Length: 87
Image 1 (cartoon, rainbow, N blue to C red):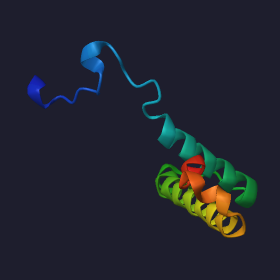
Image 2: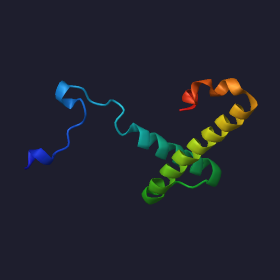
Image 3: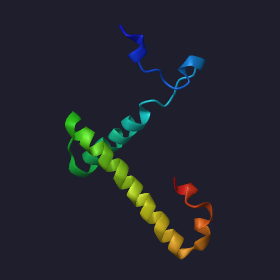
Image 4: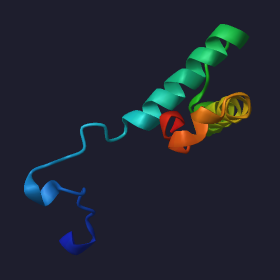
């Protein structure tokens, strides 16, 4: 085995690993599956989950961006932090 080509997680050489590694995708796919079950009464297949995960991710981001934009138009003080409270 060529160990030079094995990826090493950042911080692993110091004994640190990312405790949240892989959880973000699982949470997004889990959310997509819950939405599908609640709205459509349909369990997503693996292929459908792979497509629905990014859809949920970008839809959520666009929604938060729209909320921020609307609030920024109504109240200028919201823009003081340049959107940091909204991600």
